[in-house]
Length: 304
Image (cartoon, rainbow, N blue to C red; front, side, top):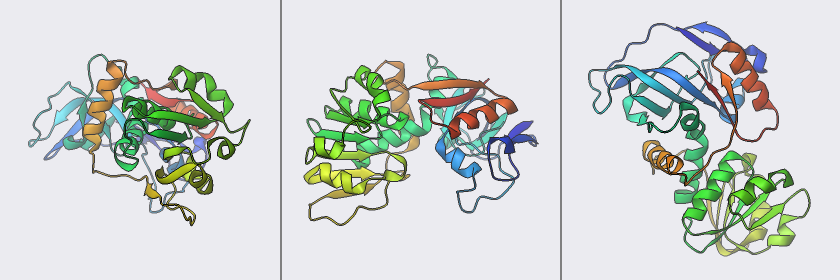
């Protein structure tokens, strides 16, 4: 079986075809035939060698949708032929082995590309809104990084809870954010968000890369506000602030999260922006990572 990985860190050209042994499930494992893989910034960081402890060679990838080919003797609840999605490891391959506890059945009215595109950004956005930020009805929620896929999903999920959302993003995202029903958009390339939004937010959600701008987050927060951010900490402040650093957690399981997200997507209560679908080939993964290295809007999915 074929897989796509690399033996050294670097640019997209490091990808090569790799031979994968025939996979056999044991215990609670399932083997799936890969149908679609979502490309994420985590994949890019690993390719560049930014993740400590990553041994070479690597078959990367975390988000996968596929058809079950084999089930282990301890598997219950899944059968051969079922289409499932999972957040796991080593997904840039024709077949993937994973614990069945990680898998979620994909509704028949969602395509593999749609389902795959939602996995990592959807899990981050859902857990941020429901757990880290604990968004409540009628709160004013300010979302930084609103133009990203995580940002747009965060906005939609907060709106569903009855929050009033204010988006901070580059002006090129204005039309997309308006289409989501956001009534106030602050374009940071045209005006200073702190000047516009000082002391406005009950909740600040910062999903920009590395949660940059903690001082600005504090300036936009009300007294006793909640700030949820990718940043590990905030600058010192005299304000009473509840700070939550966004990180992987099983307080809400990935499986429960994906089940809810798929329900919202298939019923039209949630949308995800797919920038491009690429072929499930070596060239497709190289092209996908080339696009991943450049500014892009929406998710990049490699699919059969």
